[in-house]
Length: 272
View (cartoon, rainbow, N blue to C red):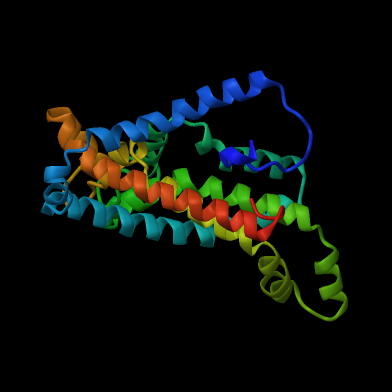
């Protein structure tokens, strides 16, 4: 197996049928992106991905994904630390609710955001009376992306905080460090690899968000039309025209996955 580029972590033998099933699973995941490469109209690739509409959609996607990732960082780290350090019934319920977007259909999440921050929403109605509208704006895109991406960061950081335990924090406390200083100087540096992995995964999830965005933010070019939405619109009229921008997102996602995996290997088992 080593001659085929398959490294072995131990000497335990695996049944042959596991390799057969694994090959099928790998093919199921790998072949569709390869099909995009094969079907890409390379003669017009540069022209299509550099068109004003494609550049606007890609630029908006990167900007909103970066903004939502920053928001995930601010909101997610405190939640992750609290979930890791407390285990009461209330915390377990709140944790389940925070992780709900992981399994919730994105369109349902978009409807939930719409009835929260829309003009007739429980919060949006009051904001509208104050002259502030969130739905169908760029801000709505950021909120939708944050809604679906936040659990990825929370899970990554929470797991790492649980693994390191409290012994280092207790030592810092005996040396006179307060809770805030301990968090900044001890806890966060120890979980930094997992924090970085969570940020990258949150960014990737935000970049690919579609359902919640189109439901809560709409599909206005230059305002709320992100790259996934632009691909969807293009695919309706001409699926071939949607391939170049789709391939760009595949490449970005691949870079993200490779970066996270490489970081994990360098950081050891503590990284997620």
